[in-house]
Image (cartoon, rainbow, N blue to C red; front, side):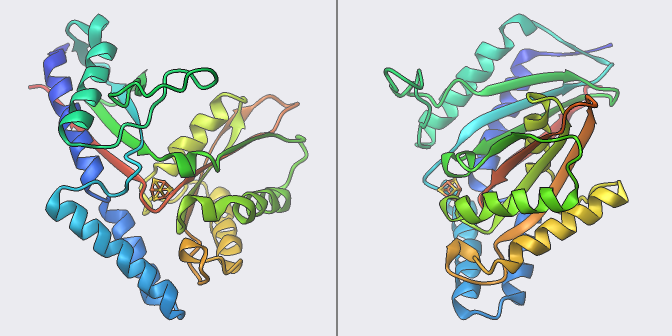
Amino acid sequence: MRNIKTTTIIKEAKRLLIEASFNLPCDIIEAVKSAAKKEISERAKKILELTLENAKIARKQKLPLCQDCGLVYIDLDIGPDICIEDSSNLNNLLNQAVADIYISNYLRKSIVSDPLYERKNTSGNTPAIISTSFTSSPGLHIKIYLKGGGSENCSYLYMLNPSTGEDEIINLVLDVVKKNVTKCCPPVIVGIGVGGTSSEVVKLARTASFRNLEIRNPDKRYRQLEKKILGAINETGIGPQGLGGKTTALVCNIEYAPCHMASFPLAVFMGCHSTRRADSKISPP
Ligand code: SF4
């Protein structure tokens, strides 16, 4: 068993928060570059080029990629060889780390205390959504995701008839896109979860939305469905920032899980072009 100090995790989480805030992931940059090359519309091409320029300036000048600096997700995947020292206080310390980074880097604080009565800013962009899971892979994998409110508001959960087929899924996702996509700064990254339960399917969709754009679903049937949905979305012609073009979505990723025979949960978790993520693995000697 290898011991990891809480202070080591906090230090790495802070580094990843900064990396995610200022650096658009390479796979997204490559997808935007490739989309810009394919666009025929001058306006669409220009918007995609400006997206790349924005990412370049953010990286060089250490500025936030977007004015909405996002709600913070922190996932910790704990390997079988890892023992975290002082883990009872880990969540508090992670939240403190989020507040430190958001305050010291002048990142916008977007979290309000309760959703209904006060809606008072918590001042440190906390609480973060912190999840821990035990995995078979050795080491400690820390993953940070920052999610803006615009794309969050375009996410949906459906409990469908078990007989639901591909065409219904495609139409449903198209409906979500047509109604909402202009509110979440397209081109978007469409994460879809199918199966599991009403609570699990949203997590599946979140995993799909934050998946590296170059990783396709290992199951051929789902891989083909990802391609069909992406094609259907881009045929709408909504385009970058909703101003017309071929690139309404950069990718469609699907994650699935077994479900109850009487159910068919489906979730759409929309990510904008500024989908920010950073991760690293701590493997103590
Ligand atoms: S949808 Fe994305 S790019 Fe648009 S304002 Fe929100 S975080 Fe920024």
